[in-house]
Length: 138
Image (cartoon, rainbow, N blue to C red; front, top):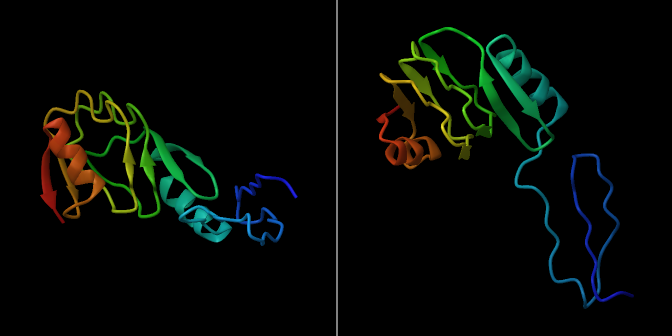
């Protein structure tokens, strides 16, 4: 037996060997793992509007490629990458679900008349307050 043992769950299908014994102090797994059907459904909602990256535990919007002034980010998206909405000057509102737990740097740069909608206490509200962007509870 070794003094150190790590088993990392990277995907929903990663086999993890059984672990037990007096030296085992912690077993950790991602907070969420999305099913393939959930990911496929979310991709349908994102296609044509966003560029994005998907793993089994996260969906990140990397760029907005639409032109609508009002955008609703689908539930299931977990993060918005750096500069994803930069220079979207006609964007006036974006609704961010509470599934978004990370919002990158300069995401809404040059979006001058923007209101962010989201839940009270959410990452969206924290980001809006930090960046001086108008926020409305929805």
